[in-house]
Length: 516
Image 1 (cartoon, one colour):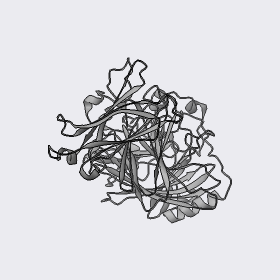
Image 2 (cartoon, rainbow, N blue to C red):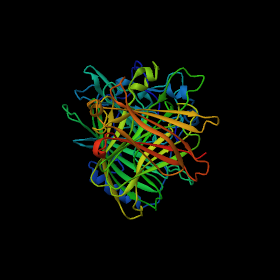
Image 3 (cartoon, one colour):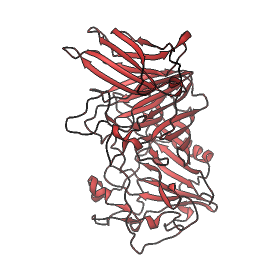
Image 4 (cartoon, one colour):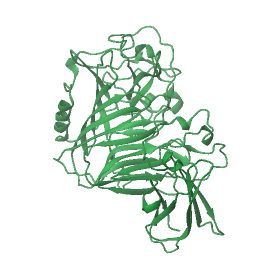
C-alpha cells in the first residue's frame, strides 16, 4: 500500500520576489497545452484517443536531492501562501501547489480553464520555501507538481481552511466543517490484493475551472492513465458541514482487467473494540474508520473493521447497490484520548451511487498493520461484467465526507462491537453488539425483540439473546459460540434484531471468524 498522504503543512511567511501573475502565480500562454480541454466531453475524447496508444509512463525528471528526502525534510518544503492562485481576488477559493519529492515522484500538470482559454500553471522554485533544504538547481524546465489543494472558508468566514487535496496516484480527500483529515478516496483501483500485484492508476493532468465570485461549487477535470486503462473524470466539490465530491467517470480499458475497483476508499484501522490494545499505548482505540456500511436493495449491513492476523478479503454481493462507505461512528473523544490525532474528528466517507451499476459486489480488504502510519483498509465496488478493451465504462457517484450526521438506516444501528476470547484455549468467542437509534429507543417496555442469527457454517452456537440496554436506551445482543475445528473456510456470522411479526428492527451486523 502507498504511504498515507502527509498531514497539513503549516504556513510560513513568504519571501519577497519571484514572477507573479494572475493571483500571485506564474501562468503560461495556452500555446503549450497538450490538449485544449474545457469540457468533460473533450476530456473523454482525449482519454479514448490515449487508450488506443501504447502506455507511456510519465518521466519524473526527479533529481536525487528530492528523491532521497526523508519524511521531515520533505515536510520542510512548503508552498508560500502569498503565491496561492486567486489569493488577491474576490473569489471564495484558493489553490496551493504541492512539491514533488520522496515517494511523490509522479509529476502532474495543472491547468486553469478561463474565459480566454486554457492556461497551464508553470513550476517555479520561488513558489516554495525549502526550509532547511537547499533549493535544487538541477530541476528541468518541464518539472511539474505532486498535486494541489484547494482552500475555502469552511469554519470561519475570514480564514480559508483546507477543503480538498489531490496528491499521490489517483488519491484525493476532502473535509467538511469541523473535520480533520483521515481516510482518502481514489479514482480507481485495479487488482487490489491479487496475487499478481496491484496496479495504481494516476491522475496525470488536471483542469480547474475558474469559479465565479459567488460560487459555492468548484469543478475539476482529471485525466487518469495506467498500463491497463485511461479515464476522464469530472469532480464537483461542494463545501459544507458534509462536503460533497460528485464524480463522473468514463473509462477506456487498454487491456482486460481481472478486478476493477470503482469508487475506492482507503482508510486505517490499527486497533479498537475487537482488537487488543498494545501494551505500550495509552489510547483506547486508534482508527480513522470503525466499520463498512453497505446499502444494497432494502438491506443495510454493518461490518466492524479489524486489524487481521493475515490479509483478509470479504465480498458483499449486491444486485442493486445504493451506496457503501467506510464510517467513523464512534465520535466520543474518550474513545481515543488523543489530543493531537483527534480521531473523533476524522470524516466518514459515504459513496452514494447514481444510476444502475448492475450486478457486482462491494469488496472489503483488510491488511495487517503494526502501526497507524499506513492505510490498511480498502473498500470498492467490483462489477460482475468483464472489462474488455474497446468497451468504455461510465460511473457516477457522490462521496459525502460526513462527521455528525452519518448516512444509515432509520432502523437500529450498531454502535459498538466487543469481542472476548474465553475458554482454556481461548477459542470460545463472546460477541457483545450494542444497537442504538431513535427507533429502538422508542420501543415500548413490553416490546418483543429477538436476535436472529445466521452463519455460513462451521460455528457451534451456544447462546444468542437480545436485551434492553438501560444505560443507552438501545438494545444489546449477546452471542456465544465456538468455531468448529474442522471448519474448511472462514465463517461468516450475521445477526439482526427483529420484532413482532418478524419485522426488522436493525441493520444486519456481519463478522468473519477465521477457522481455527
